[in-house]
Length: 305
Image (cartoon, rainbow, N blue to C red):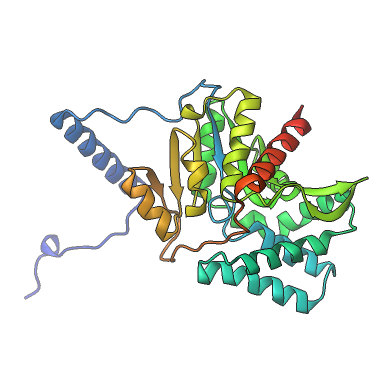
């Protein structure tokens, strides 16, 4: 004899309203627990109207899936800027950074020289125009929505938001503009008369150089770094993250995850079932880092003013 219908459990798919009801119930439970235990609620952040605060976002694997420089390289290959053999070499260099997780100086120097040799003798205006097309082709659909929402929260609070990346400053500026951000700090390639020379100004904007760039920009903009936020996926960006009052680990690699947890930094991970990957460009140190960071900050500040 079959059980009455009202005794038979029925599985119904969750509707938008049921999801909303569930989220509301969970939030109410958390609020009730906080009130009963006397916990102090977390203050609102970012603080609306605090114009002496700003946000600094790493690009590769923080705002965008993968490395901007590699996506840019694919676009240049499609436009016959270099041969298939060079593309394979470029891809291998990027894979080494991801898989090995070791920033070997020889590999780093080789990667930098390869990228510079590709643009040497080309006009800045030409590469900038092509960069706009490459963004639409390879980068637009690789933006992490979660990180984009964090950046928008700062913009909505009336604060400036900057990308800080080892990618070329021209590429970084295009991405920042497309996302509605304030601007970008990136690696500055030397140009004379609007033509790339194949040399850098200082060093790649990586590691300590990023911190120097943020420090220089903050001084030029009159920012209070203790009220600023920084976001990155990489342990290499600890110098930049440690510079601000509100550091965030976004899609962190293993070393940054541990470092952030030990210091009770906020973490966000927008990946689904994927191991953290680290994509890098040569680590800069000493005077090279200071020169690279200051050059990037001064270049973008002059461009805006």
